[in-house]
Image (cartoon, rainbow, N blue to C red; front, top):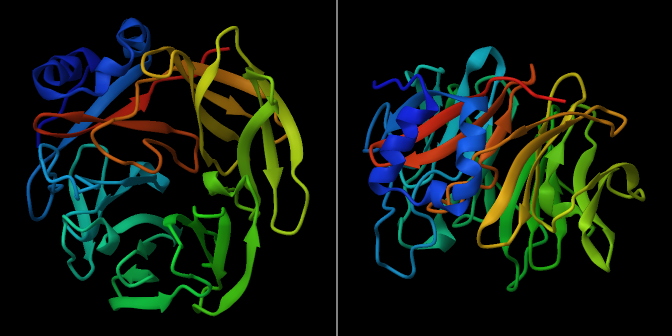
Length: 332
């Protein structure tokens, strides 16, 4: 397993065959000092590798590699190997710890793939299967168990999912921002519709977080909000910028209740400033750091992840694999 100790080394690889860093060339020299590249998980099929078809010219192929990363306790990471039909766990060195496979689907048929996942407890995962219109439970205890998602219709667009510590699953129907819900046993719960549903970020108490425009007349200020199904959102704080904010992704919370977001400022096609921001449980911003761009070659639900202890990770595409980076520290 090849290990890269500097982001500069990763940038050398990116220059050879990736467009990921091209999104923000002006910001590149800013974020490299804040991040360490811990490993590159190689492309390929089988154990310890991740399948990719980034250069596919098939217009039907919407998903061309991994689509989800989860940061777990103890420096472990789980990656949804979308085309390889498995959830794979790695340590920070890139060593694969275990793989939990599920039935294979056609990589060129986006409507059959598994595209998102959550983890209610160590070693167990919930995976959103578009082909089965179901949530799969994966563990080492046996074969995957499928629970059909209740409440879908012909226009449904299942887009993302998350699960809470009790094992309940929440699936986003992006057609109308409806949350389709089931308990840990797969029994349907009442659906819930809200414009803030798209982020699908939960804390340990089962509360959701997202950001919304503070004013319809300007994109230079966003509110951080917390909400629960059936209740009105609570505004916790605000982010302002001298430039328009064109990218907002609330990507996780940690065990201490801190909330993490990725934001891009400037032009949509070429943002001049990319940051990761941390907020405490009251919504006060407690730190920020320059951040690498998301990998445009892959449709990651969140290309940044935070572990329960507050360690922040990011992924990038390199010619020989998926590069995993870790934030050194937040600044003021």
